[in-house]
Structure formats: structure tokens, C-alpha cells
Image (cartoon, rainbow, N blue to C red; front, side, top):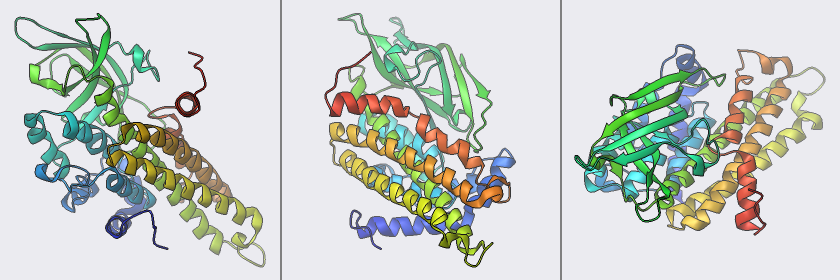
Length: 388
């Protein structure tokens, strides 16, 4: 059934991306992960077809769309079993921040490459001792008066894809000369910069993209490494974080749809009594419930994307948090039910669903935990007092 929430153009985009994903599929994704490789072929073809840059400005090689289009791309690839995590990081977070706040030189240098797939950027915000509390970020940048260079010092953890990105958009803090307080600022740090060290973190999540700990030891950057306005602070930061939440919701929705699809296919054909097991309400009803929850989460994700693309940052912030929460919860329940539907087969390598048990928890935890989202909604939406 056509989705009245989406334009015909967006529905056509979904159909085309789904066809691309089907040509690669879960077996491709599992193979490159097992080999320690990257989804380079899929990334390149998605770029050639214009899907990677669909949300970036046309004047810099993009498609001129928004997060609504990019989140649809990620969801459909995920539903085909081959999600591209770097879609969240490179074009959605970094590309959006650069498109909105970057200098003209930064836009010309980075956006065309992000759009055509020849360049990638990573994003570094999480720290060992900060976690969900961005106010405790200790990575600092100080400007050298004599040269105008910036010197960055600090640590980051759980940073995706640093090894395949040319540079990382680092969230740092600088001292406000008027108040003496630290304020957030964004810097582009090349991977090969002296003093920039990365260490892989061994993860139980089965995915091509690796996670890293970063150490920045007096990393020297030119003055133009600063992205946007030094005084813009949280405005620039949330220009990337709100799309990240929408894209994480799309990531979870794609995974949930893939899991439900696998379970439904199995339930239609698996026969141990008179009828296939899908005829029994004990199997059918939980899958129907999972489908309903996914569809509801999709509606909120669409709303968040539309609000963001319309320039309503405040409204998008609330909706993006709700979308991420709803999609993550729907994903976890869908995956659990899919594995349970297959019984013992749900735990086999042949069917590949058991690995999603761990992967589905990622959306609950990152980029912000469900508990912090509930805090946000209780404070911002309901007006309840803070406990912290």
C-alpha cells in the first residue's frame, strides 16, 4: 500500500534502493564482515546511483534532498540485510554539519567527495568519562596566539570507521574569553595528523565497521580546521545530533523489517502439524505486534525527518528522540520474536538471526541511551523537574 506520508518521488527512491539492497543482501554483508573487509562495492554503487549524497546540496554534488531521503536509503538497505552504518556518520552527521555551518572552502573540499563516495568522515563525541553527559567532555582546544593554530588534547571512545575515514569531526571545547567557561566547538582532524592515535576496540557486534578509541596529544591544526562559528556552540552540535537520531531510528527500522521478514518467511513454510506454524496465533500474533510497533516507529521517524528538513530544530529534537526510542524498542522486540519463531534454527549461523540479538541493542544504547531519551521527554515535553 502506498504511504500517504511520503511523496511519490520518495516512494520511488525506496523502491530503487530496495532493489539495490536485494542484489547484495545479507549473504554479502555477512561475507565481508567475516573476511574483515568493508562493504566497498555496495558503497560505491550506492554513491554512483546518487544515494549517498541524496541529502547534500546540489551545488556540491548532492541530490538536494534531506534527512527524509537519506533515512529512507538507510532503512531500505537495512531491510535488505545490508545496512551501511557510515551513512549515519559521514553524510548524515558530518555532511549536514558542514553543509549548514562549514566555510565555503570546507564545503567545496568535502561535500562533493561525501556525495560521490570517494571521501568519508568519522564523528568523535563520546569520551571515557563523559558518556551521555556532553557537559563533561574534556577534549579541549586552545589557540596558539603566535601562529593561529589550534592544539587539541583529549580522548574519545566508540568512534566508528576512523580507519576508513580521511578525517574525524571532533567535538572539543574551547574557553570563552568573556566567561571563562568551556563551550563546544567542532574541528576536522585528519587521520594522519601527528599526535592523533587510534586503537581498535574489540566488539561483540558483528559488523564491517570497527570501533576505535582515539587519543589526541597536542594535535596541531590550522586555523581553518574549525568548523563554523566558534561561538555557535550547541546549535552546530545538534545540527548533527538530531539527524544522527533520525538515522539511528532508520537503522533500527531496517533491521527490524529484515528480522520480521525472515521470521514470516519461515513461519509460512515451516510445518510440524497440519498447518504451517504461522497459522497458530502463538506465532502469528507476536509477529503482527512486532510489525505494528515497527510501523508506528516509522511514522515518528518520518515526522522527525520532515521537521528537521523544514528547519524546525526544536520540534525535530523532540521528534528525533522519540523516533530513536520507538524504533530501537521495536527493533529489539522484533529481533527477539524472529529468533524465537525459528526456534533452534534462530540460533544457527545458516539463518544468521542470532547475531542480530547483539546488533539490535546498539540502537538502544547509541548514540544516546533510552534512559536519557526518557529524561529528555520528561523534562522537555512534560515539563517535569530534573534529578541531575
